[in-house]
Image 1 (spheres, each protein chain N blue to C red):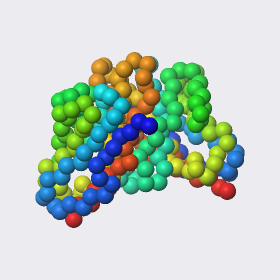
Image 2: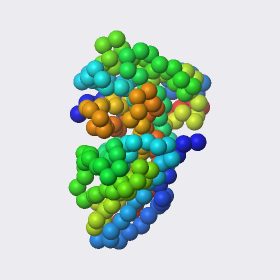
Image 3: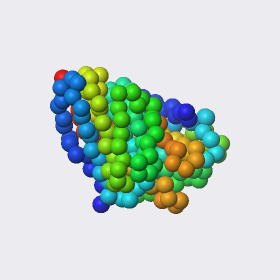
Image 4: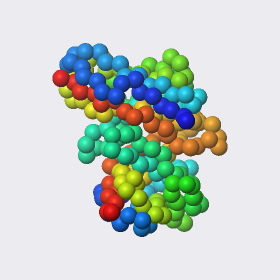
Length: 113
Length: 115
């Protein structure tokens, strides 16, 4: 299974940018990089995804290395509501209907007021 | 707002009982998934389904079965509940249609306690 590696925890000050790193050295050409976050007592929430190019949406930006073996989720201005566990995941598709997301233990992000 | 709805937020069952966890999605998604989440272990995939009446084993299917009779509903069944199945159970759905990769949508979870 394609795996990702993330730091167990990170801290950031409120209103500052946060860069959450992820390594995925075994990524295959058709695997999408997905990021989810999980707030306390809730299910994971989709944040952003990409394949090769950098991506931006209203929640965050995703920077993907040229060799695709690593990526960085960027929260441009962290708020207290961004405190969560962030998961970097490869969406692996091996033919129609044969896909899975394999979650690791993620990065617990703490925002310091 | 699109939704994945899990029938119960909290559930307490006795050892040996047959337990049904229900999940319904209103997004016409083809894929549906059941995960369990335990401290220190993250989310682990139990079963998934990419079509009605189709099912595939995930990473930890032992002790579980699933049913998908309608596209919108995916049920997880614990045939004979045991204490080691005490966990948070999360249902998710996703689209297979090209150009509609918006990721997975998760329900809020069912916290099951087996006593």
